[in-house]
Image (cartoon, rainbow, N blue to C red; front, side, top):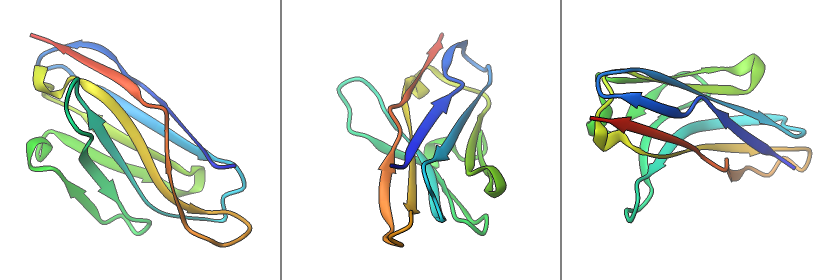
Length: 120
C-alpha cells in the first residue's frame, strides 16, 4: 500500500519561509508526477505545484516566483520550498503522487496533509 507522509508544516510570520517534504513508500516501482495541493478553510483544494519524474515543473500563478518544487527520485521524495509567505498561503498542504506498485497500474495517491499557518 503506497503511503505519502508529509512534514515541515507549521506557523510562520508573513515574509517567512517553510520547506515541506513528502516521502512516498510502499512497494513503489514507478513514480511519475508528484505535486502539492492546498486547501484553505471553506475553499476547494487547489493546485500549488507539480513536478514530473524528469523534473519539469508547473506552478499556480499565485505562487510563481515564491515557491519552488523539487524531488529526489532516489528517495521517492518531493519538496516544496516556500518563501515570502503570505497570510493567504495559510492552508492544509497535501502531497500527491501518481505511482505504480507490482501490478504496474498507475494510481493517484494523497497524503494526509500538513497545516501551514502564516500570520500577518
